[in-house]
Length: 538
Image (cartoon, rainbow, N blue to C red; front, side):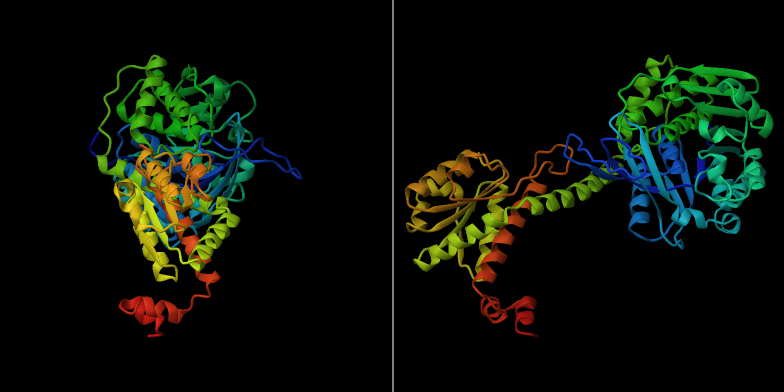
């Protein structure tokens, strides 16, 4: 790999938020279809994507120094995409003056086939003048420069390639859409042919060859495309048949790696990322095709096209490359652990709101009402409310007792492990105890609940399992379960704590409204601080 330039590869083109939906089948016009869930219960997800960003991502996984340039908006989709670039260590040189960042709606069937609907957004606004004035330095700092015929205007793509050629870079074009989709949407037919003529490396989709070269075998069509455009290398992805690489009369047909296909979205992009790495590493044609095939196959094993878990993706690519007979590779190290932390953070921030929304939808409104009625009836008879939990739920219990007390329902924290050591005496028969446990099977809490019930307490369970021992021992159950905690281990309570807090906050709202609790009532209980001032109208 040469380090004479700042970047091994820099590219411009589609940078897209892929909104991926798992469909039972791809429907035709006037049809309706059902979505399906993955193993974690999800039917949809947001992923980093886009033809150019995907191939740069896979090149980065294989150690290349990568950069992307172009136009986006400073909007949620743009920030999502730039965060993805940063996690993987792709440098970005982005003009944020665009109208809206790009997104795509993708529907994937159980065999991995997909239908894609793209909104080009700011990518369509990139001009040749933008390329000249804002991105020339990036182009001149790269050994390989890539662009695509998919979303970027042809005039802008042409100027990218002209500047790259002038700077002595190898030029790469991913011809991703048929000529009928490219013209006139992206520019004129003359501009399309000018773009193709400026490419040293061409990777067309098979559909994109129609209208440019005649019918025939993949070998014949690759040769004809090279002859018509002057490309030094043409690479064709052939799906389950593998790939074909043509370079100056030499042809290599490489079989596909055998994998279980989950989603074919971006497999060709991943292939190109592997091919770019091979060119940068100076591999021979056979090993270049193998590396491209390995990346494409690894991509097919995941939902979405972007390699957001680079260590896992690299390991899988190298495993598949070896299985295809590839020679040893000497790859640059991946980014530091901070990138892993960033990916973990993004995953949690994606999982936690989703789990919280699902918990809110599942929360039994009738059960919340029943719990509130139980508390009000107990208070009417002179009884009181206590909240308890073991471990992390203990902290939730302290918060819940404070929240209830400040909103019209006096409540005391009850230490779960102390119940059987005398603290049951904190209660009077008829008191209500809210007991919190995600599993509903925490041994210390179950012992406490047994003692509380024998003492005459009524139990409201807040638990993630409605079939648990805690739920069976309760008078009312507020289910607050989650499927994922949001981290790689899935052990420490994170999303489940949020769900428990949500259920308890919902109960506090129900009690507050049922009692006709007023702003003046709140002010009496909270005379100090900013909330006190706000309650008094200050």
